[in-house]
Image (cartoon, rainbow, N blue to C red):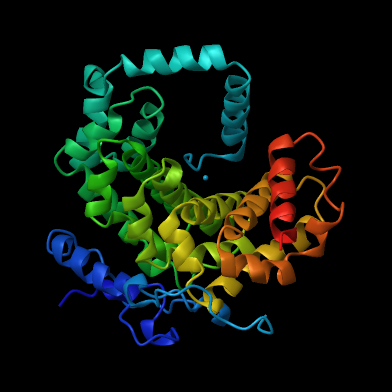
Length: 386
């Protein structure tokens, strides 16, 4: 009997709906495919429960089709490298962003290069699958993803590569609770996640990645709550994989995510993780909201809507204490603006929208951010309409 359900994020019985959590069923399906070839799953871990107000995101197939019918009185990735290496990479990316012409030229040059023309790629793929230098292979292949646009196709098509990556990920499950993951193992898993992000972001492999239900294997990492850097890296890199899936609008991706616990997990990360993790988590939530099915799903019940709005309100309150809240603030405003497209949500937003967004609290912050300033003005105008 497959034991992969040991790492289900939350017990379906904790939800206020008498339904079967799709995440459990998907874990059983996926586990039956790979458990024979990989001895992946260790003893059961004691997963930390989500906060009570986040436990209402059940299978959308069983959710009521109606919108919020309640009374007015109810109220990303990159490889986890050492810090100096990350800073250097971020500086390089910032410099490229300021030079659109050179960036376009680099992208064109990258498209003309093929991974299999590089003998080192073949060597490291062999090492990852069969050799003794798996850890180094993960690192080297992660570096190659910036050079070759078709590396994702090569990784997906090469025999044993995806199995090896899944083995790297699931082998550390027993170390998540209690949190005993070492820095070395965390970096190794993050390097494997970077390669999965490469696969998840490529148009030729994204759907195959979803059909294999591989994103579900990242949820145990998203469910961790330890503030240790090793676990923060795991959460951030795992979010990067999901962020790569939603970056390009796709109804299939959103439909898949709505059958999982991604929304309550993102909400918890938005409350309590690092700023980078919060930024990627709210980006994922924003992309879900921008999809019509995602908006309808979140606004289907008052509990779901209030869970999202309460976390957004908490973030606004925290942003007032920061000196540079701009990066998170723009996502918060856009989430509120999208929620206002739902008529029932709009009615409630008139009551619960944070005061700081109504007055000039963030006026100085938004002075040079014309896009976010326009979104906030549109939000306030929409809410003031009769």
